[in-house]
Length: 164
Image (tube, rainbow, N blue to C red; front, top):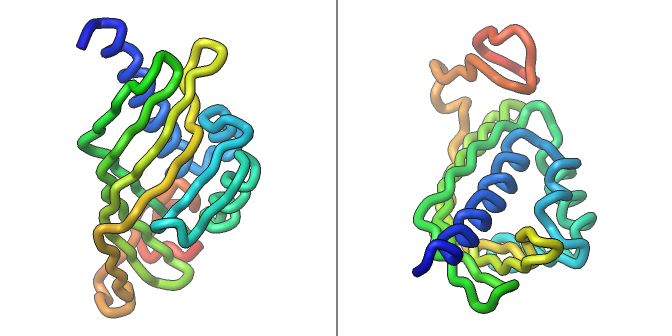
């Protein structure tokens, strides 16, 4: 791999990291900067499929907008292939945790993202995004009486036993 290819791959990594940053911090307007207008999504092995940047972001926003929902998504092991000067594919390992203080559950799991990227106007964009779960688990936070959420970007005060 030459330096130019390495730089292209680094730009794609930064694009994917920005997507995850926007998801976890609920930055919906900024998220529009990662998708081409005609982007497609197939989350959870296609169970949740959407066409168009606006539809994808609207679905994410609807599901994640609540202050009671806290997420952390970590990406690992990127396998990025430049298939042409303006097209690339990427496979990413995902590990995520979702804490929902309204429904008093914690969800965690792992998945593999399978993405396609396109380069337009001198920069990379997500053309297709999707993942398939390796596993997902859910537990009731009520089952562990001592478990407390002690800090949150979405609530003020930082007191224990946060209820959004």
